[in-house]
Image (cartoon, rainbow, N blue to C red; front, side):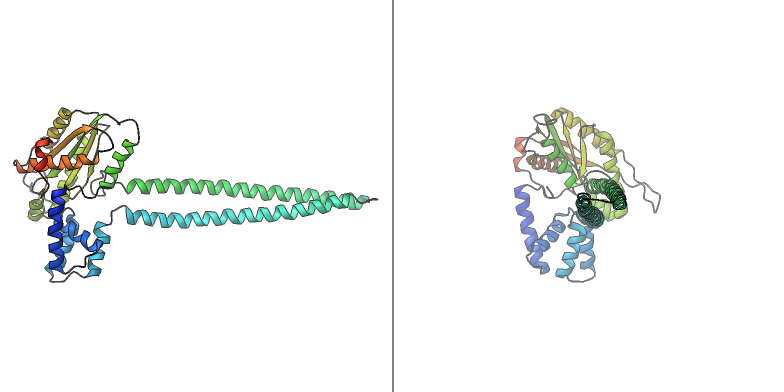
Length: 358
């Protein structure tokens, strides 16, 4: 689901750098180790970079176990482990429900078989000649008793089924909530990368947006590494949250935003022209330039924050993933031109590729 959106030239350059770093660190050439080093070199996962640097600063060598722990903690997407936990819990609850239903059904079935055999026996007795009154009354009482018994058993089964149906409905609600939370970035409350691309795919399979003009905006906080290095990750997080709030407040009801990297965001807008998309980008850029972030330790306001934006505008269709690459080239053009600006992709930007968005 689009965890990495680098262009082919950028990917080739990153591949070379990753292989060099893996050799330097003595990493095994496995998918897990490669992915950890890739995200470290690409700088797209600040918590991972911080964790790796902490190992390196202590003079420790990164063992295979260390790399696998980092992979699970910082790369396995936020939705996977919580959702698995939910699934495990829900599975256990569902198993209990099934056992209850099975037990109730079994009891009712056994009672039905007993009553069935009894009724056959009563029927045979009633066919005997010279049936005396006492025996007849005993048979009537037995039929009445068994009829009430099967009625009560059936009623108990129905009650159990209704009760467990309610429990199953609750489990379905819990699963829906878990899946929804799995699509959200916990720091900012906007969609994460999986949620963002998943929502675009949902649009693709509907009829609402098909064939309409749309725009993809890639946004990257300028000099974010400098903000983190100068003021710490707490201030960096505040900057990221501030940007997310502005994006939510700036987009229309048909648009949505997502955090697709450490300090990188995306906006998808459909039913808009390229001019509208550029106007949206400019509005966001200007609002972010007005943001003031306070250092909680000193209560002083830190230096202003700016953002660079790249935009691709196209007709919405199955090839929407290529918009990421074009918007990213436009973003790199904004960075190369001095940052703090909005750039609309043009065919002449084919040579631009992503190196560093800091």
